[in-house]
Amino acid sequence: MLRIGLTGGIGSGKSTVARIFKVLGVPVYNADDEAKRLMTEDAALRTLIISAFGEESYTNGILNRKYLSAQVFNNSKKLNQLNSLVHPVTLKDADEWMKKQKAPYVIKEAALIFESGSQKMLDYVIGVKAPLALRIERTMERDHITSDKVEARINWQMTEDKKLSLCDYIIVNDEKQMLIPQVLALHETFLKIQP
Image 1 (spheres, helix red, strand yellow):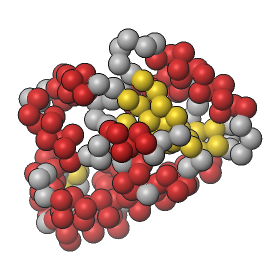
Image 2 (cartoon, one colour):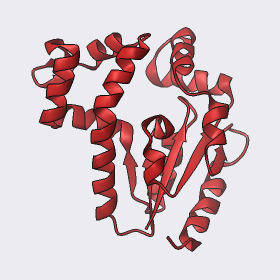
Image 3 (cartoon, one colour):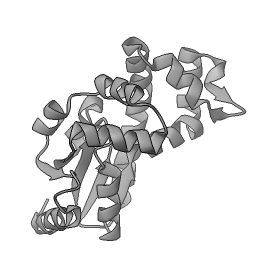
Image 4 (tube, helix red, strand yellow):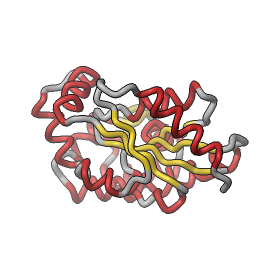
């Protein structure tokens, strides 16, 4: 079974691409959603987060995302510390999930594939590309935040050019080129590749 990564910068539309793969019957692991789940459900991880960031990290056993975001935003040392706690647990969870799948290939959707080192456990990585102005507009609409806040988030991420240069395949999600035919073409490609 092939293991395919799916990544892209904030607002690029990687979740939309992931949904199209799901419609095609491809199992998709959303690393960002699963990391949030693990931060609440994994007792050992929860203990590490409380130890590093304080009791306020959880409210009634539920992850206090607003508090934790405030701790790591604009603080690369704290962000790296949080990622160093969460990434290994998420990588292990993704690996266990992949081993249970029976499809010809699976998709791991993650914003931080290269930053977390998870590309090492993948056969190929797809990058989703979109113009910066469109990425900002989409994120403002989705998260109900200002363009300044979106740009601050973008500035914390690996640059799109760098990220895409590390990818094996690129999907352009610029609202000019049709998305579904690009995904279908990759689907056919992956079905033909024998791991």
